[in-house]
Length: 115
Length: 111
Image 1 (spheres, rainbow over the protein chains, first blue to last red):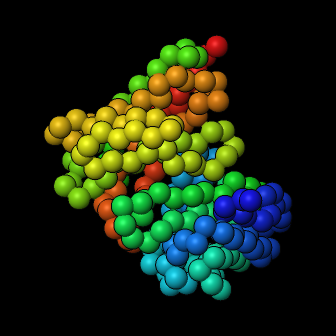
Image 2: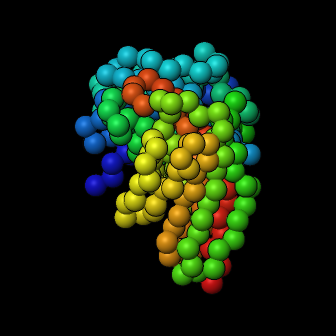
């Protein structure tokens, strides 16, 4: 049973297209995240949702729109894809509060390649 | 805006203890020290965290200095599968705080 699952694992698309990456967690967590890891391997947070409410929104182009239909799902939709969007996108989840709120569980990543 | 400093790389012999250092001299009183690792092509994996006391779990031990300005992650018996980038992160306890990854330390365990 995968705790945090992302689909698709690989995505190759043309510039200008719109694509979505889906994420689901079965850990009962109420906070979910999207991170981006670029070709230089820097891992940067993009968004965080708590109980379907956006709580962290880093300086991300508004072409990126996260959507959380319920607390177990956080999807990432990207409009008008650009070459610089090529990266591995990681979804993660955690508890909101308490001593273990910084213990994030990550998915295996979705590698996006924009041609 | 990394708040931690780690060596870029380290080597360790298989079966020996791996001691990974981290400096966090500007740590605040309410900030925890977290350690994560990322094995090649996988998602980051939580290892351990602590506030001021030393901590141990099935994966590793975390030693935090008394002044809390530095810490050491210890993998007691490193295996080849422990080869990964190890990240030391400081973060306040509680909700709504970011977990900000720096460059980490690439630990290579050699046979």
